[in-house]
Amino acid sequence: MKLPKARELVEAIKALIVGPYTSKFPYKPHVPYKSFRGQPKYDPDKCVGCLACEQVCPAEAIGHEDITDGGEAKRVMYHYTDTCIFCGTCELACIADNEGIKLSNDWELAFFDRKTESFETIDKELQLCEICGEVIACKDHLRWISERIGELSFSSPTLYYSKLKELGVIDENIVSALRDSGRSDRFKILCARCRRETTLT
Ligand code: SF4
Ligand code: SF4
Image (cartoon, rainbow, N blue to C red; front, side, top):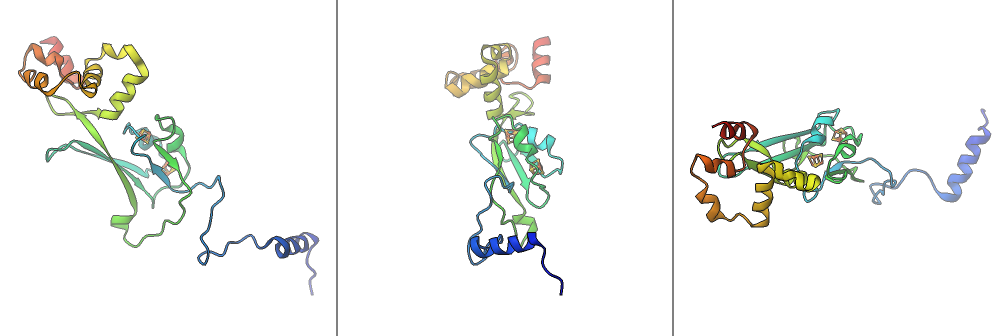
């Protein structure tokens, strides 16, 4: 009979005294280690919808869809559980102080229906060009930029009009007065192309 090695004996004695390494899951809930890299989760209050995480994700486990019809303008951000490799690159690249998406301790990721349960989503409100209706960015992203660059945002009408609207300084009466085209176009929230055209004309 082959005798156990000294290291194996030590491990066996340790297991007898402090218990085995394995947990009793599913009879007892399993608590992962503190630094466990589990399912990344969006924080809808912190995420600004910039898409940086989507661009850096090596597994293409993040996607988005811009919905601009049916009276709503929103960006739906998707995280695909079945594609994610839990590398944490999205968290590292997140412009919202790495808090828009974060790895969690969530490891129980089994699901029955891939079509409806293999992803998580959050919605962000979109800002559309007030002339052509093109997507400019998420409203939170514009706010984030103007907060970062401070008074420099006064060099971009789109940024400071967004800010003024958010502060309630431009109310709906003024906005409706600006619906005419012409010089008043300069006082609208515009995409880069419409801003160029209104400036030239
Ligand atoms: S953890 Fe890695 S693979 Fe998963 S969504 Fe983030 S960047 Fe993509
Ligand atoms: S704020 Fe962070 S989580 Fe949100 S879209 Fe940008 S990078 Fe992704």
